[in-house]
Amino acid sequence: MRLPLSRAETVLLSAAVALFLVAVFGPALSQPGDYHRFADQRALWQLPHAMDVLSNLPFVLTALLGGAALWQARMALSNVQRAMAALFFGGLLLAAAGSGWYHIAPDDAGLAVDRSAMAVAFAGLLGLAAAGRVSERAGAWLGLSVLLLGPLAAHLASASGNVLPWAVLQFGGMAAVLALALRPARAGTLPLPLAAVIACYAAAKLLEINDQGIYALTGHWVSGHTLKHVVAALAAFPVVAALRAAAEPRQNAPGATTNRPAARRDAGHA
View 1 (cartoon, rainbow, N blue to C red):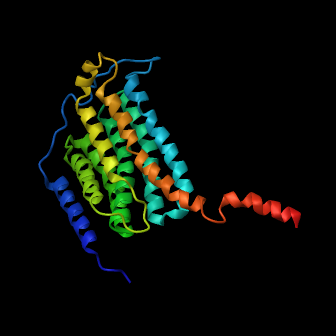
View 2 (view 1 turned 30 degrees about the horizontal axis):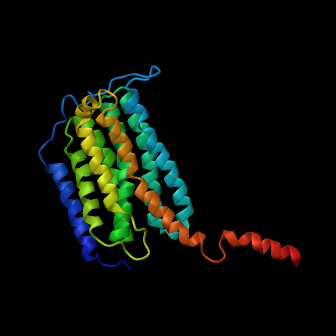
View 3 (view 1 turned 180 degrees about the vertical axis):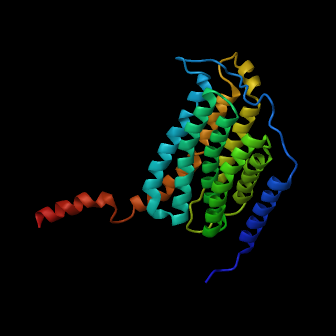
């Protein structure tokens, strides 16, 4: 028997429906004509726009660290939390590949690939946040909804030039994370430090907006967009830390792997 929606689930569902309606029926929003003109145009080892391409490597590092932490904590998580965490870290790997591909030769088609990969990571993060602060089913439907609609919004922006659906997904999604951060974590769930994730995301957006200014300020040493990639990758570390903390009680529990060598020694003397 299905349980009725809780108050928190109803509020979250209503907010999601409202954002969807804004994305579909709101006024079209055009992408700036110079969007693909990034500050740092330098090549390295014949790699075009090398700094904006190579600065995606931190996403690979955090994804691998996250995958290892998820494996250690897997028994401490629910099925939904495991799935959403895997989606988040898998999305980071896809984002590294998609963003690297886009920045080699920036254009609308490449940007759609880049944003579609980012949407996978968004889906995992939103699903984790909702599962931990609202309910398991809220995390599941929110994560899967973003996983479906995010790439659609990205490709719609590329095909039609209307970036409103993507903007609603991106900024509405982070507004949802901010709202969820104000709720206490549910008992027995992964206590994600959502405030730290939001802080990294906000810093990354400021760096992205000030791409040219930071490039000039640093004497053409590093651009804002390059730094944006590095800081955005840092947003995964709070999730990694939470997973490692969730794994520690099981590793330190009686009968854990630390006791197994002693058991083998006792068996040898029997």
